Image 1 (cartoon, rainbow, N blue to C red):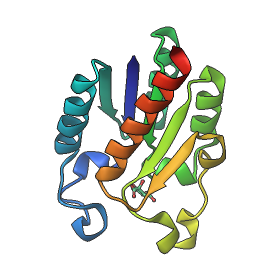
Image 2 (cartoon, rainbow, N blue to C red; image 1 turned 90 degrees about the horizontal axis):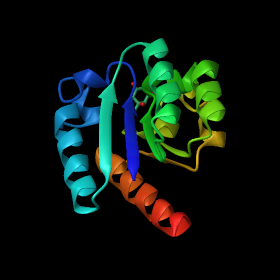
Image 3 (cartoon, rainbow, N blue to C red; image 1 turned 120 degrees about the horizontal axis):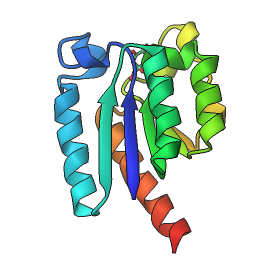
Image 4 (cartoon, protein in one colour; image 1 turned 30 degrees about the horizontal axis):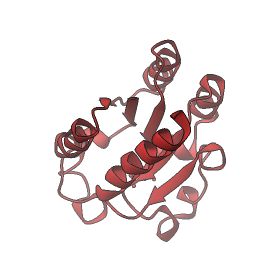
Length: 148
Ligand code: DQA
């Protein structure tokens, strides 16, 4: 399978950025642990981060051309603002899971709404970096159950 993991703005600062909220692991640490899981499952994993909305949208559009099977996305603040990211995911029809490190429902009310959540297969939030691992495992389970 081909799985794309996308990370939105400011997630390049993980580890240094508000560690009490987002944990001490860097984005590279998360990429490494997901890479290890993907390797065990002989799955191709592409792990990316951008601070730019248009870049994330371009990657989602390209994912369709590259026959990506599943997307795991932490849209970061774009979850709360981006109709364009929602539209891109709907356009390519690639199933996806939305991940947030922090529990967005325990935080400011402007973080309680996500433009992606109702069109996602599932949403994981509040479990820190482990949330990405659970999302990847769920994606692999779904793909294994549907493809053969
Ligand atoms: C976040 C939650 C968002 O509200 C915030 O803007 C982020 C990170 C998280 O992973 O907890 O940048 O997506």
